[in-house]
Length: 213
Image (cartoon, rainbow, N blue to C red; front, side, top):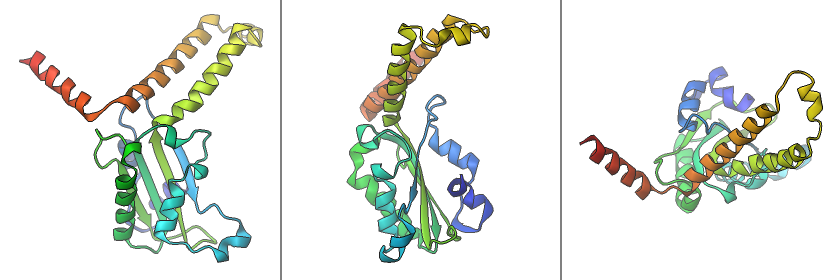
């Protein structure tokens, strides 16, 4: 939260606000679940031995080990992402690094949303650090987490474990079935956009135009 709102609270070269962030990160209303990360994640004792540069921050930022979420972004594709840097740095270098990441790992980004990585730079770093970065990504790999929850739920629901506590409070069994169905739909939607290609999008547009004519 601190990293996401730093541009609202401190001066910066490339400012960002919550509305801009929401517009850029949510391409479809239902797909609004983000993976977040923070860099640098180093112990206080080893900070002095670690050089903090924009390339180093960028490399750590996109690393699966720095994600605060039990899903591996390498198992999916990024629909959108946002990188928020803090500290004294050049916006040109930040833009170059972001472009570099996209070019080197193009298979991990959907090709039908161009320029889908946004960046912002805030001049004031967090206390005790010269530079830092916050990462927010909308990746289809987050479906791993939902799948895991769904499998655990199905196993328990089949045995009707703990169900009496909820039905005793006035809930209906159908509400649980509906919730399971909604989660499965969400996973299917993430998978659909992970598998989608730019050619498919173009074909759909052509079909719509033909129908309109």
